[in-house]
Length: 248
Image (tube, rainbow, N blue to C red):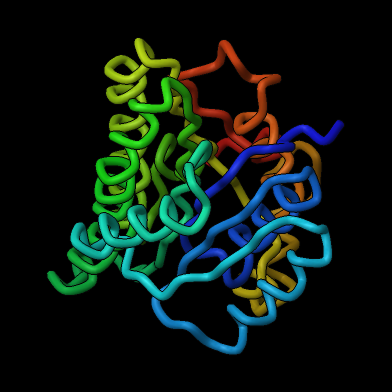
């Protein structure tokens, strides 16, 4: 039996990268998948088509996860379309990297809004659904820099550290209703963005990683499958680094 059979997941920011890998692996494990991004694009239609090949129900939604009214409307629509939400994956995120002395207020606000407020908005919106069901798994994408910090990423690091504190807090609140809340903290993962870095930069990163390689989006997705499944039925309030041993 597939690990996520008869479950329904809602995943934000799943048109590409880590979010798409999570959605794909969830579908492969028998999960029905609702996913969102800012706009309904050709990429969203392609993801729907790819995931439908696994025989699951799948639907993409245009929604701004950082806007609370959008988050509430999205959750209501997914419940209407799918009947329930067993799993929420908070994956939406952006970067606006800059040294602090050059960082603008707009760069700070944009990253906090998209990366951190979206986690609040989506979790707040889905909580009543899971509370009524008496079960649920909420997985939020933090980062290794949310644990260790990183130069020129004060806004991103702060947003990802905030996700960790939020996750640990709501785990204490929602555990009584069997709602598990965990975070994953990816390190240097090969995505479309990191693939564009110069080769010498990639090599310098690899030297700092004990496993001497970058991680893959599928390796992040596998940990999310575990946390979403009943294999992790007694795991909550945890932050799991997926970083090959990297210490920034």
